[in-house]
Image 1 (cartoon, rainbow, N blue to C red):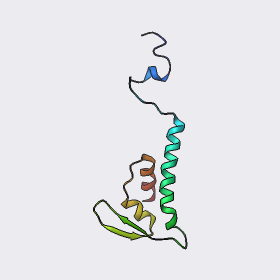
Image 2 (image 1 turned 180 degrees about the horizontal axis):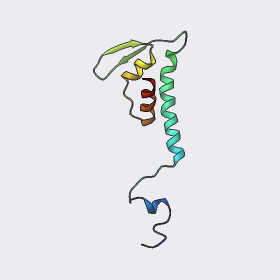
Image 3 (image 1 turned 90 degrees about the vertical axis):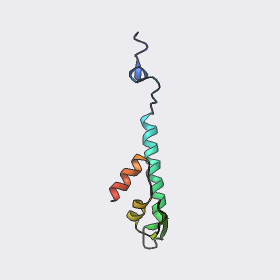
Image 4 (image 1 turned 30 degrees about the horizontal axis):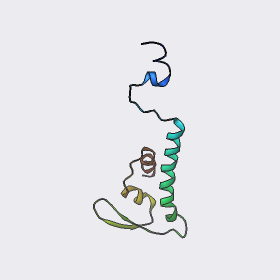
Length: 88
């Protein structure tokens, strides 16, 4: 193995490994948290509205409690999962 092949990040990682720039990851985390915030912002405040949530079992819940809504929705993004766990 010559020096040029091992130079840089691509030389340290296995072949076929994808590397994402840190800025892209941070932006995706921020977007995931913003989506959750947009979903819940109408529940907050003196004129907060109720949400109709249907969970994976088909159970219908009508609530304005943000923690109850976050408990019922499936969140897959790691930053979103951390946000929902912090609310519990």
